[in-house]
Length: 105
Image (cartoon, rainbow, N blue to C red; front, side, top):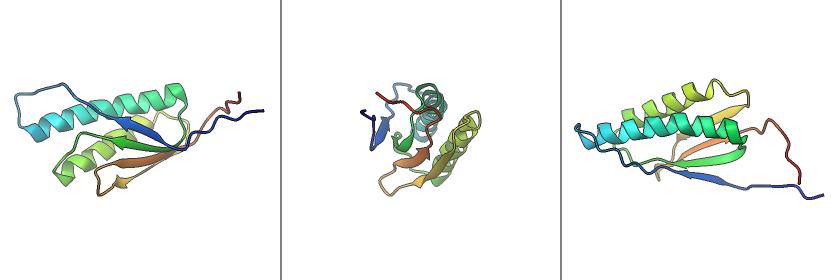
């Protein structure tokens, strides 16, 4: 029996949206949209374990907190247990998610 194990999941966010507002607001908008999609993909693919999200860099602490709030809100629909950490010094967001279904190969 072979069990599929993943040690690390990494999600990179690349935005092509260019708004008329300042750069920080544009980056925040792209990162918020990405947070909603990340939550959706985690549920659809039943991704579990340690997940590291590399958002587009934000300078303002308030923007980072808004991203965490958006991600938490989007994960409320998820039946799996999730835990979101704060942004690291490298501006990465770490989180964990428990698998709902066991997948064996």
